[in-house]
Image (cartoon, rainbow, N blue to C red; front, side):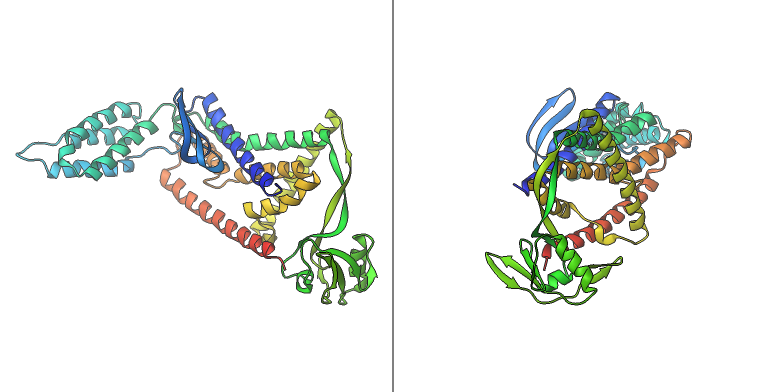
Length: 421
């Protein structure tokens, strides 16, 4: 259960993020053709008012498809032009193929920006493609047919790229916006229902890999009962003993599987002016503190504000090469959330994850939400002239490469932490 709850929590946050995009897209007149709980392939689906609603077989939150996220361009016709060339080469007895003139007319309209004419011209091209079908390879026909349908769809007046900038920004911001709102509501509810009052125990909740504690043989679940042979009554005692040792090796005695054992002596390491062994104690719940609606609202706002400032500072540090050891992925988030499920503080953690998800998605890099917002605003600043798709594609490649790099650094950190001693 302690593992399932964090996983379901993450899936819930991703689902409401996608639902935010979808609902606002519908509200501002965009054409949203699919909304899935989970990712396709579909386990069950139903068409309703132009949208396919479904349950996906891959349980990864949610999926929404909004038509026309990228402006169509003439280069999108290259496989249709290949089909026209093939039809022309196979024309017999001086017959002129019908597909070539249809494609030329369509590409001319696209070059001139006459996208209102595109759906009708696509229909003509599709009719010509069917006439030429006996003269085309099946694969050539299928690819050209698929591309023509996609171009017609992307030329729809309700396509994302054809909407006013404010509508596009509203659609994209809705995802992170829902996560911010969810974080606030979860926190406010958490303060009203009650904050668990926790006290540290002598049981070890986590051991930092390659730390002195790990090298001594300390394991998660051990109960520290003595330091240098002196009984340990409370967790603060080990911190005091470590600082008093001033770098001298100390010996821990632990209770493991009902038996006491003495570990190898190890010297603490100095981190930011303090001696540390590299372990974290568990906690136990000793009470509950509740607040009224007004005070809970204030506390939720203060916590979100403080967490946002701290996150932005951390992102700045990471950008300048500091603190990369703190990067984590879904693996680490789930693992580090597990103890909070049993002690009752998981709602607070879930709210912080929701806020972090919003902040990360608002970073101005493609293909993140912040990147889409940035390019929409650039278009507005240029008087409605869009950034070329080639530029957007190149920027997206850089953004994807950056995210992959951060992912692998975070995954490496997670694997190291999970390996433990």
